Amino acid sequence: YNCKYCYSSAGVQLDKELSYMELCDIVDQAESLGVQSIVIVGGGEPLLYPYLKNIISYIFEKQIRIVLFTNGALLDKDMSHFLREHNVFPVLKANGISPKTINWLCGNTKAYVNFMNAVSCLQDVGYTDREGTFGISTIICRQNYNEIIPLWKWCRENKLIPYFERLCPQGRALKH
Image (cartoon, rainbow, N blue to C red; front, top):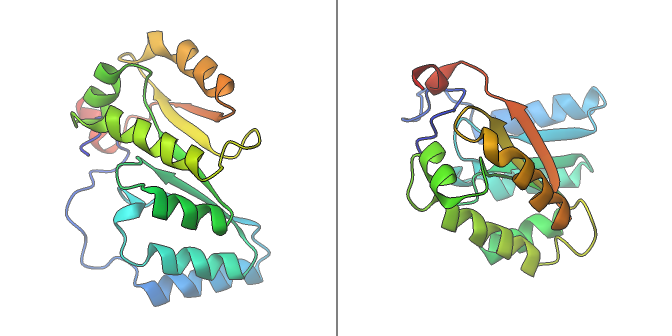
């Protein structure tokens, strides 16, 4: 995706990003400090990270709660099942309720379809068997302002936790 609101200017992977072993070391340090949850956001889409399942398994073994923010484009039933087995709390990004708004803000004409597919995959593996088992994240901006209340209602009707925040003018968001 090329999200218009992205807090970073993400794109090409940087040379000095943390290795898998460095990430494990950070998890170990966090555990020793008493951390109870770790939020996986990534510098873009976390599901692109080749060792994501490994790091989730590593965190899970330490009984630390895991929250995963994703645009859902790569979320299939296999990954949804894996997340459920590892007690991950997924948060899907949906910056509106209409296909037009979601696609425009994400800079991808398939963003809405991908989002709905991700919701379906999570539901199919039992994520909505009880209320509040995954969330929906959105930024509040001029382009989706009229969709905030309908999106909130849709979340609550579907037993999802709405996580809404105002747009922070940094990274790519400075251009829009």
